[in-house]
Length: 267
Image (cartoon, rainbow, N blue to C red):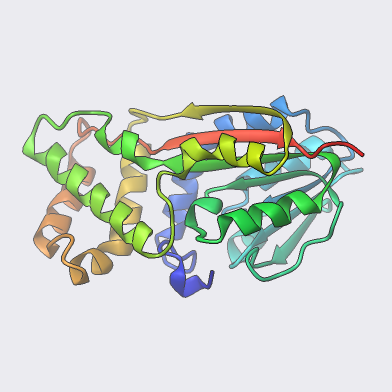
């Protein structure tokens, strides 16, 4: 997938707000999942689509000086600006077309990458092939439909937010993303032959300004697309952006982040 096909391009000025919001909401969940599979000193780890680099930083601390973390993304400037550690290797990498070493990693992690890829099954095969026998794969992706409708709109303001979030889901689908991928992850890992499977899901219903900050960053970034495809008017977008700034009581639940994990069979 090229940068132009990705709805939330990391080169946009809103990327920093998105990375910070995602880290604040979901890093404690992601790192708990990674700890659960036993990430330990000396492991060689791969963080695909490392974004702002916060999970890669946690992995680097966990594996210590005898371990290595390879942090990749289509645009690595955010990682390079925020990650300075001798056991972190930063790599510009397109998981769709660029090769990965075979049988090379004790752990591979991705958060919010597969959800954007139409060729996600082929990418999953590539990731599993890059695991060492017995290595762990941890995947985390959104399931957005439940989050959008988890609070029945009780006011016109809330109904407007629901319509705009539905519009973003439509844009994602048109670019080959599956905004409801999360609940399918466990089945996908099983069908690709992984064992010792596990999974869970997390949604933040109210984290103060954090969830609203993420909504605002995403909406600003795709406002022109929503307008040009007639999924929303400029007036509707501007009205809701103002509400996200002004209304501390405005419900803005996060998408549900579903995690699934499993091991490549040993031997």
